[in-house]
Length: 211
Image (cartoon, rainbow, N blue to C red; front, side, top):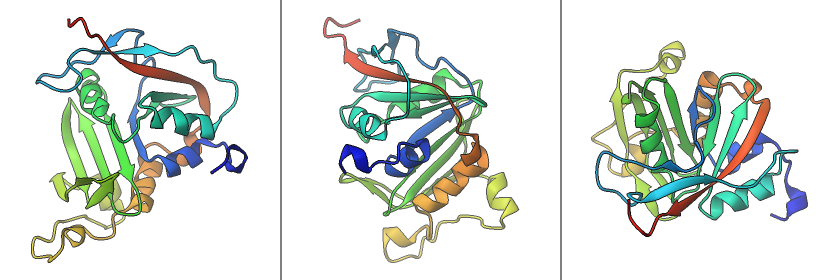
């Protein structure tokens, strides 16, 4: 799409790049934030640095290009907390943040036309996970459920379960795609709650000198 074809709304970015974590707090990254796992990973010596960017108006084209370049977009909402958008190759950041912000109840939302992925995290642990056969840029996430059904499932009487007798992986969890994940997003975060307070851009940089 060309720049003038975008609607320049946050809901549009969610639809185009449904790979986002919601944490009910602000100032997610301090400048020079070290990415630390409890086990060996590709981010062993990586740090997050804030770009020189000042938010004036929403620019979907710019944010999509930023995410494609491997950077991170943090949208602070007027109410509730922050949305952390990442590209396909950097969503390991969510694993780090769920540990760092283990005192908060946070959520992860992913999805496209092939499948969906949703997690509720509390005390750094998964409370509920629903993942259908999701394929993003050749990388496959296989179907899985964990934890007890969430409030959304109970209220709508739509409990997602795995069919281990299914012939194909895509049929193990049926009818769980981007639309269903966006419905979960609306329930737990709120589509009507997307008034923007501020937007920051962060680069993920390796410290080649080690620790």
